[in-house]
Image (cartoon, rainbow, N blue to C red; front, side, top):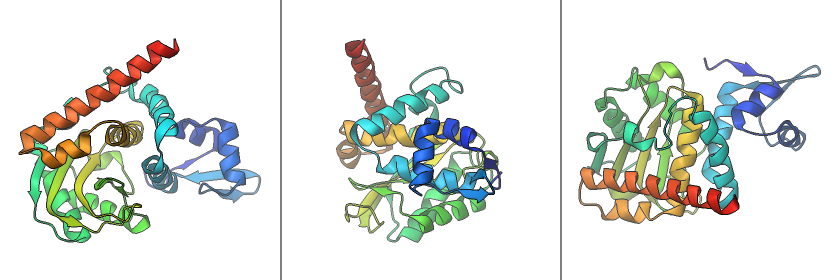
Length: 247
């Protein structure tokens, strides 16, 4: 439902923010909002794009804190902390994508996603990926991009999945560090909470483990899949250790 709207309390819960934090963002004009008289209206399509870009830009403690909060919402959907085993398998990975441009990356990654059997509408998915990249690149430092639809609606996907492509050559993709990209995750989640949580988990894995180096060095799809599962376990183990230390 791309035309769905939120009130201020709804959007605060959706984004895992306190009402005070959200009111600060509104006051500073740092979040998309419309004023209908005294009422604040947040359009879901705009909030999804804003939230995903915010997550991609988080680092260090703010990212870890957001991930902790999003984990609570995700646990209402999946009972176990590790989400990667259900989302990715070697068949969802292409270690030698031939794409040479951003447009061809999006086409080839959509085709790879379609092969998972979990995409209901490949054409709409490609259009959503193109619309999301038109807003702002999903590239992040380290040669990685986290592709996702501008409107990650439930009808697009049968169930949650990740596809991963590694291009043979580096692609100029608009990453904030100015460096080219050759690792491309495509995130598909029919549930909004899992969508944002998955983005946060992947960012944490990229920042806190050797995932990117390992993916560049992996010899085949099976090895790349093992790298992803191992990186997630490392992040979860670190989180549990931090929780015990603070307790």
